[in-house]
Structures are given as structure tokens and as C-alpha cells.
Amino acid sequence: MAMIADNLQEVRRRIAAACRDAGRPVQSVTLLTVSKTFPASSVRDAHAAGETRFGENYVQEGVDKIGELADLRERLEWHLIGRLQSNKTRIVAEQFDWVHSVDRLKIAQRLSEQRPAWLPPLQVCLQVNISGEASKSGLAAAEVAEVAQAVAALPRLRLRGLMAIPEPAGDLVAQRAPHRALRELQESLQAAGLALDTLSMGMSADLEAAIAEGATIVRVGTAIFGGRPAASAPVSL
Ligand SMILES: *Cc1c(COP(=O)(O)O)cnc(C)c1O
Image 1 (cartoon, rainbow, N blue to C red):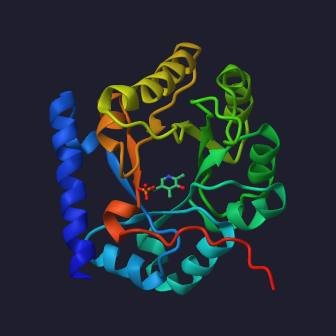
Image 2 (cartoon, protein in one colour; image 1 turned 90 degrees about the vertical axis):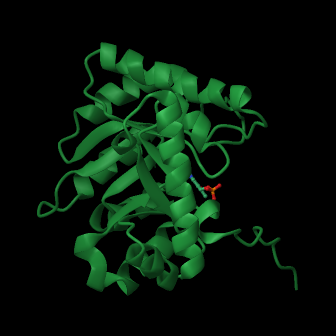
Image 3 (cartoon, rainbow, N blue to C red; image 1 turned 180 degrees about the horizontal axis):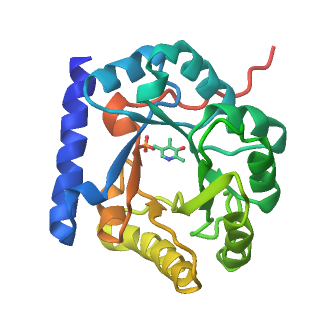
């Protein structure tokens, strides 16, 4: 608990320093606390330390945590940031507030159809494979404009902007390049008439580079909760 509060203070200090360096107001960057693999009690601790927005990677884990924290539901915003398969869209449309990882039109169409009428529109970003890695999900940069226009027209979604997970890079200059590319892509969509206000980029290791290039949401896990256990190898019996 004390550790999470201390870590949060340090992350907020880094965000404020990066904003200062970039000549940006500190309120222009929102912290999304990435709670994947950590229990509901850790979310409760981070909430007690002032956080209200939480990011989850895996649908079922997120839904379980939303349920365990039902008493806080009105006060929390839940963001899905991991890969979404089409057979899981309904529960996501019903339970989450944001989806950062929309990577094809079909997923967006299902989310729009399945978003309950009593909830506000689902807030979405398109995930872009900005480093062009064969193994990564996300739209290719060249596909984004056409998909963005189609998603923006869906009635129960609100397209807010773009999200990326760039390839890790060592120094600030190298880290900035893919973040700049995502910002330029966003600017081209804005020039084409889309009202977008969100660039979801920057994690524990590269939030300074992302803020320098215009990030409006940074998604931070490790620097707040500590290291996650390495993905376990398949168990063979
Ligand atoms: C895990 C994860 C993060 C947080 O990464 P850290 O390095 O732990 O800060 C951010 N975005 C996505 C999509 C993630 O999966």
C-alpha cells in the first residue's frame, strides 16, 4: 500500500517533469494505471492513493476485477488495452468504459451493436502497429484512415484517437521516433476532419518520450505495482 502510493508519486513526478520539458500543461496528460496480473486489492490501494482509471489486458481478468470492485464502479473508469477477440466483444461492450485496442472494423461494429443503450457510447482508440512488427497486433499505418472514418460513423462508439505499443528502444531519441510517427498519423486524420483528442502511448520505460511527442494518456503498470511474473511457459505433464 505504502509502496504503491510512493510509486504513484514518483510516476506523477515523472509525468510532470516530462510535461514541463515539453512545454505542456500537466493536466494534458492522463495516467492510466495498468493493473493487469495484480489483484483487486492492488487496484483498491491505487484508488485510495488517488487513481481512478485502470487498464486491463485480458478480458476475463478485467471483468472479474470489475465485479470484485463493484462497490467502486461509479468512481472508476475501466480501459481494455489488450487484444480483443470477436467472441468477447459483448462482455466488453457491457462492462468497460474504453477500449484502446480496436484493431479491425469488425470488432468496432460488434462493440457498437452490443453497447447497451443505457450506457454512454464506448470510448475507443484504434491500435496501430507503428513499428511494423510482424508479431504485433494493430492496424498497419496505411489502413488507419479508412478504418477510422468507418469507426467514427458507428453510433454507439466514440472514436477518441490512436494507441500504439512501439518496439522497446534504448535512448530517448530512438524512443521518440515511433511516438512521433503515431502523432503524425493522428494529425493526418484530424486534417481529414476527424475530431480526435487522444494519443494513448507511453509505458513505464518510455513515458517521457511519449509525452515529448504528444501523448495524452500514458499506460503505466510496472512503475506503479512492480514487476509482473514472466509469462509462464506452457505446462507439460
Ligand atoms: C502491460 C501494458 C502496459 C504497461 O506496461 P509497463 O511497462 O508495465 O508500464 C501498457 N500498455 C499495454 C498495452 C500493456 O499491455
